[in-house]
Figure 1 (cartoon, rainbow, N blue to C red):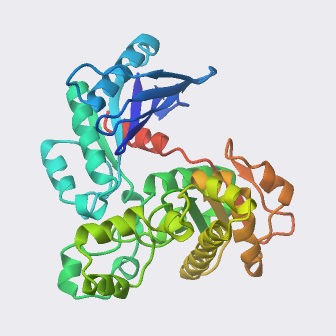
Figure 2 (figure 1 turned 120 degrees about the vertical axis):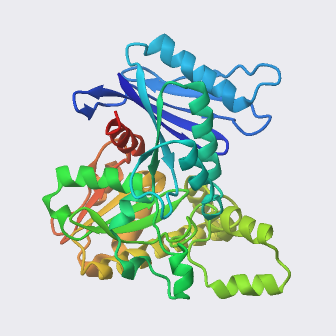
Length: 397
């Protein structure tokens, strides 16, 4: 028996199959990704089973068939042909926003879907696609429980001082407040730290750095402060998202005649690393461009690092200091230069990393990279949001 964890996006579907072992979840038997799911796209599935090489194949799309439905047919065929012994008992879906409705995972019903759809405007790049994925899986796997697992749930321990905006209290009562995101990732990293570092029960800051980026401060492995707020736009600059922005900028743009859709496109798709560099949203591309002499690429990567330093300092103040710093996410796990930049800037707090350990930490496994004289532990932890979702889904079986 097993749990299938999925993360449905606008043009891709990530999946992982976790065996149920006793009362817990084992290591993933297969992980993969289906890309090309945009309208008129050519879907292609890539996957890697335990102990085997990566495999890939084009997804066959029948005439008039929806590309997402074709992808699900391919995934079902793969599971039936190669992993029939691990019959899927539940499907755990990553859902970005649970709003005020849900502070923990929930079994999906039509009523739950209707409530979650009201939150689409708060996470337009993710929520509609998450929900469309749930509906498609429910139709393709009609006898399997569908479980929604929320990125906001980990932050249910935030205090009112952290969640409340300084606006009319009637708007606060309507749900205009800080929620926090990347919760599945932070929950996983907190679990690893709980096992690896006794100090992490104290003052810990975790940085999930990737195309989406945020920072979270914890004590006793519970969220106390985080950079993302009402939507997934706040806080750090990201791949194409602006991060924190003076609301006066939006008022100015409106006065210049900008409409809702134009502003939304700017903030979600034309800002961040892409907007600042004018070249790319990919940190790897910008590193190469910077090495080739691009001043714009160098400035964009420096600004990204500066914003991380700024927020780590702010969140550390919220929890009274810092004992452990952890990097995760695509950039956090793989970009040694970024980690060095951030930690060098935090040296005043007693953060010192070992250059060799940092260079060797490639995101393949959990690694400590702090130097012997560092007052702060520094870790690189490859995240596994699918495992956390599978753990939550198991509780419903």
